[in-house]
Length: 47
Image 1 (tube, rainbow, N blue to C red):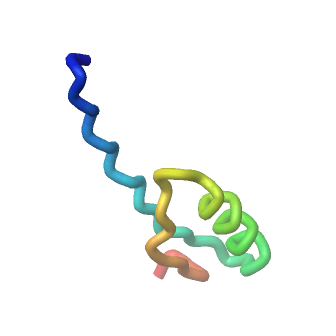
Image 2 (image 1 turned 135 degrees about the vertical axis):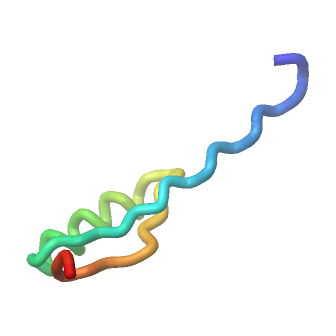
């Protein structure tokens, strides 16, 4: 580049859906630890 910083990439927005609360919370913890990933919601089923 020519001295100009590249624009920051937009965060990845995730909607988490799983019928097992323990699995959902574990996946959320992993995603929350990642830069550039935002969990925007959770659901217990696909409805």
